[in-house]
Length: 324
Image 1 (cartoon, helix red, strand yellow):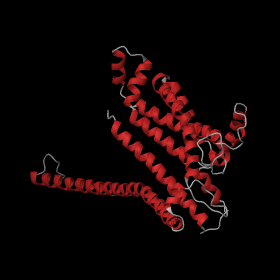
Image 2: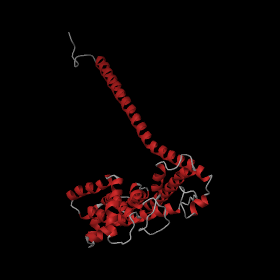
Image 3: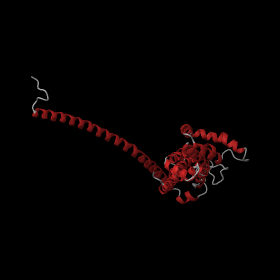
Image 4: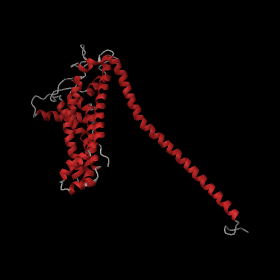
C-alpha cells in the first residue's frame, strides 16, 4: 500500500525535503556558474575593446615618434619650428613647419567662424523652441551632413563655393583657404549642433521653470540659464569641431591647394599639414628619404596640436562642469 505524504513518517518526509532541497541547490549552483562564466567572458571582451583603443593610440604615437626621430637627426628642432619655408621637394630643401601650421590654423579658424555660431543657434532652436516631433525629424537630417564623403565637400568647395566667392572678391585665386574653410565649417556644423543640443537638453526642466517663474522670457532663459548650465558640454562640442577641422584632409587638398604659404590671409592659397601628408604619400619621394620622413614629423606636430586643443577643452569642462 502506497503511503501518502500526510500518513508517511516524519523522518521520511524530512529526508525527501532534504533531497529536493539538494537538487534545487545543485540547479542553482549550475545556473550561477554559467552566469558567472558568461559575465567573465563579457567583461573580458569589454576590457579588450576598451584597451584596444589605448593600444592603437600608443602604437600611433610610437610610430610617429620613432620615424620623426630619424627626421630630426638631420633637421634640427629649432629650424623645424622657426624656418619660414617648407620646401622638402625642392633641391634647396627647407623644413620649416610654420607655413603648414599657418594654413592649418587659417582654415580651422574660418571653419569655426561658420560652425560655432550656426551650430550653436541650431542647438538652441532644437533644444528650446522646436516642437518634439519636428526636433526628432530635423536633428537626424542635420546629422546626415556628417555622412557625406569629404571628397564631395572638396569638389563642392572648388567647383561651386570658389566661383561664387569670385563674384564678390575680384582676383580671388582658384585655390584659396577661404572657400576651404567655409566648407569645413559646413562639415562640422552637425558635430557642434548635435552635441551642444544634447548638452542643453540634459539641463533639468526645473531650472527653466525657475527662470520662467521670475519673469524671464524664453530667449533670456536659453541664453542666460540653459547655455551657461550646459557650458561644459558645449565646450566639448567645440573642441570636437576644432579637432575635426584641424584633421580635415580632402577639402583643403582640393580647394586650398598644396602650396605652403606663410600668411594669415584666407584669400590666398595655402597648404595644411594633412594636405602635405597626402601629397608626399602619393609617391613623389622615395621611401626612407628625409623628405619622406618629414611627413612623420608633420604628423607628430599635428598630433601635438590636437592634443593641446583637447587638453584645453578638458580643463574648461572640468572647471565649469555642472552635475545634475
